[in-house]
Length: 296
Length: 334
Image (cartoon, rainbow over all chains, first blue to last red; front, side):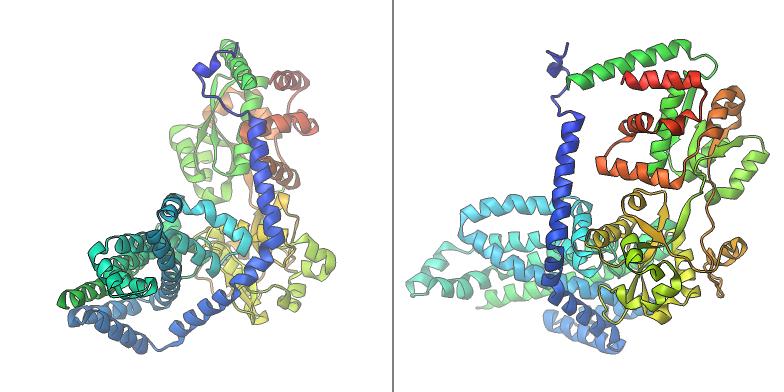
């Protein structure tokens, strides 16, 4: 009777075959984590030490010093008094509403994640720009990283590394690194062929061409990529707090489960404030690098 | 695939035949709540009602609060098989008083079990770790993932009810003075993930958990004795209150876990009521079943098959022999 059933039903593995596949893969992962978990954890130890050190640094510095450093940073990047004043006011308000410690924790994890994303992302972007083969293999991987629901890889990472900062940073980087890779690739590919030819004519070596011509000309695009990376890292704050990363995400989670609307709104706004500040600073920096080139 | 096709045909024909002779019981809705043990019990109830009592049973998904409210206000669904009644005690009592619902029986005879747990392999090595005094003396064993000078205690995820009781008991037993830090795992998945990780590598673990759960079925854990006994009054008045400043140590009192039915259904189907009042599980057995479910990654229907086939002693005590025969016949036809 089932000879023609494939016409009405999609051919499907039966329950036991499916179960076997799932159990085999789960078992393989479990024995992998039992075998190599400790050494992988040890590999990430230096990063963990750095994360903890950086968080403690931000938490133990006096608040006015942190605000002052951020204000100087904002001014140097943007040369705009308005933005600098905005930074000072926003951080003062965050502290005034009792969210200082959580904001510092979130900021430390975002800054470290962004730094790592840039360190990982720019070389990959350069490699993609130089070879079409690399581009065609890396692009689908980036697509997967951006669309795979975070919880799918979050819990396996917890099995491997436990809960806390390291799995949080890994999850954030997986989600946030694609823009900087894509835009580095794009930026370098968009550099004028004639400019490159001119550089070659002057006898520039491939390295000189890369660092003297391609990267500087691609800088506005790369900065846009870094800007996007920061934004996506901030968007992951709440998800990362589901595996025990302290910061602004935790009160948000708490307010979701208990329907504390004001608590959720305040911490949500603090995340927004961080996002806007980082966005404006990196964008105006990108704009200034572009103007510098226009001036020459 | 052929097998599935055949079973679905068979199911269709059996449900047709139940339509025909579903006389006194009629159509029944059973609340299928969204955690493993509730799903399992709901599926068992459905199977037994359908094949043993010729009801036309149907599962409706729903969480504790909405299900309880709907039963009291709308008289639907008919049965809530695993109701943690403390979570809406006053509303349920009012519903019973108004003659809208009825407690049909105790679903978990030991009650829901909460506590602080350590892995069994640690207690085997050092039996003193089964008590809070032993844990305090050996605090150094429980390494903190981020701060070597502290010890780790896995608390309850932010925003859950148990977060209050956990932190009050943490305070009451002065665990911070022994170097413990209360860690927020962020989510239920984070908490169970941290147990799984510790267990797979035989690492030390101390924290809050509850039973019956697949986690405690799969990973043998020992409940830590606070040496205080249970002080239910203090637990209700202080440990579960955020603003109580003088918490004292007390073990978690067992939570009542009942089957709740609507009055209308109780009046209509007394023989099903008799079954529901007899139907109850021990926590150890439920943990074992849940662990099996997780190991097999089984869904509700598949688990019922396993339960009926392998736990005949348990379920045949809930029904009379004629009904038991009908159920056995139905499962052999699956």
